[in-house]
Length: 243
Ligand SMILES: O=C(O)CCC(=O)C(=O)O
Ligand SMILES: [Fe+2]
Image 1: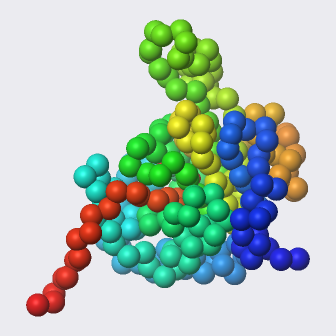
Image 2: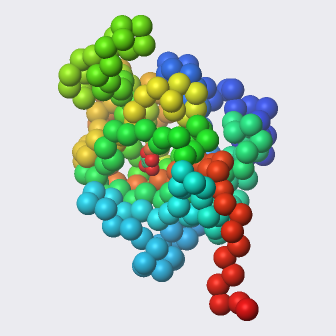
């Protein structure tokens, strides 16, 4: 059977997560085990200074540093550029080709605080997961606005647990594409847990054939490739060492 990497835009709709707000696409086994191992090898082949150590995870930034005045574009390495083009060919980014990739590494027990990806990115996030699974949690905004008409009812409650409205199980080798309201209206994060229990709040259990509600999954080391497009770039050529 042809894989989605070959079929492109014609079949993305088959992967829509209909239980989630618009729009989320979850594609299990987007890459093969060989491609997964190749990407992991590339991630660990980079020089140590390429890693930024945060208090709860490590990351690599590729493509440039997004900035309100524009990003000084750095060419993506071939191993990431290939996947940027494959994702563009699925048709979720209106002809845009992702030019920025964050590599996040999480050991078991590490996560990322609920956040928005913000206005510097074109509002479509593509995520390839490598190594281990995670649960990506989605939260209503903790807004303090008083305008009754513009505030989500569920957002007025106090605790983060109450604001959690659903999660997505991201298994190794999968691709997740989130856009529209899922990008603009909600926060996303990963709890710092060592085990995840699949509950009715996991919106894509049906798309994970080996999984069922009630399963307890042990977190392993996970690497994510967050592949996005930064629309505002500065056309400065870096001519390092050349005269
Ligand atoms: O690891 C992930 O899947 C989420 C990463 C993320 O939200 C980010 O880098 O902004
Ligand atoms: Fe994010």
